Amino acid sequence: MKHPWPYGLVMLCLAFSVWAQKSSVGNLELHAEAMPTTTLTAEAAQSYRVEPSADRGLLLVTVMKRERGNATGIPAQVYAGAMNQSNVTISIPLREVNDGRMVYYLGEFRLTPPDELRFLVNANVLGTPLKAEFSRKFPKD
Image 1: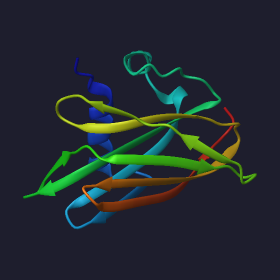
Image 2: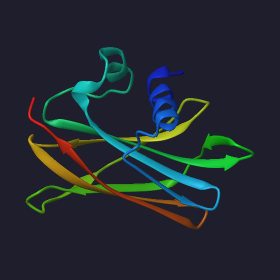
Image 3: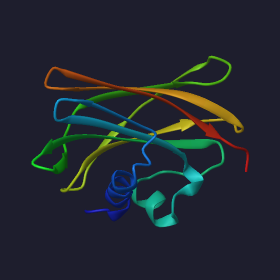
């Protein structure tokens, strides 16, 4: 079953460079973004089994290979975690989603707004390591 939301979000993030973090090694790119689950549409949340809540966030990660100006999402080994302002480490389990056009990884995590989390994402593609580090503020609604 193909789901347009994440593919569309991935393409929108790429087009407008709104990724929180992008890192590159050769023709490989790691893109990562975190957002409150309350920003998801009801359809997207249901399609990806994500429960929108003020105390839950979503991490979206994609690893891409660029060739001749085109970017293709590719599978990778991806691990993610975060640290809150109290220096408490949060492990973020990721699940791979392959919609036929793009491969991406989704991970849900708990948060206590207002908070700022520091994310660390590590990926490995056939022995090539990629790493992204970024911070994201989650205001109280």
